[in-house]
Length: 304
Image (cartoon, rainbow, N blue to C red):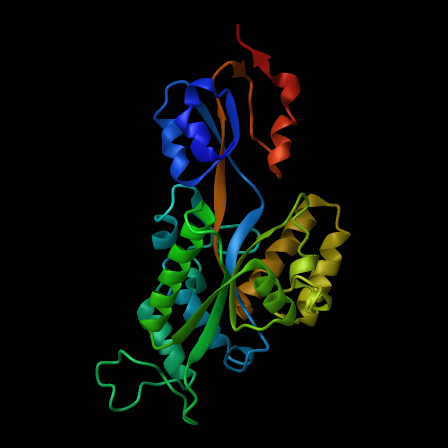
């Protein structure tokens, strides 16, 4: 059954694995159910194609995209999202790079040589560099079936991003693409900016997403990001079994990505497991995939 069908007939429901979006309030407002929150190692981000002419050599342009975004406004549009700043799904709001500041975003673009034409006295149009090249980027996103949670989420986020970036002088051409076309464009890296989600799995293995060998049509390095230093870190992390040393290396990796801005990390989803209270001892601690909710089933007790 669909989530909508379950909500319409909650009296016959004992539990729901993954409650998301608009349906969370239906369970919160029903005294029969206990909600257990859990977060999976997933995030949604905007990936900057490091081979795109405007983005390739210009870290300040990439940083301006990041600083123009108020992630708080984005997550406030949803009941089931929390902000993230790094690929390790951390919050680093004390770091200057992750703090929203439209004035600083405008300053970064000016320093990069992108200015409004003299006749644009209101500064409401598109910026150009000294060679007359427009500050124009295309953004692609997956087209989902209208009426679904994913359709609503994607369109809201894209609309927000486009408005935020165009307010500082970008021209953003948005394309919502069917799944087959979307996958083809990703494999060809035919985009400037890509909105998509990624899942890190059990061991937060960043190799697939950030190692330079994965910047190919079959790989998942969606930014075409290449850094010898980052490659070395990622290779070391895979064979570090001392937890403290591994965490230090992961933090160094996050620091490198913060400085290079190959992607803008937006948020991660929050899920809820709904139970009708007939089972006690449920814990969502350590859940990496939805199926892990049964990992502690030995501690569950059925109430009579």
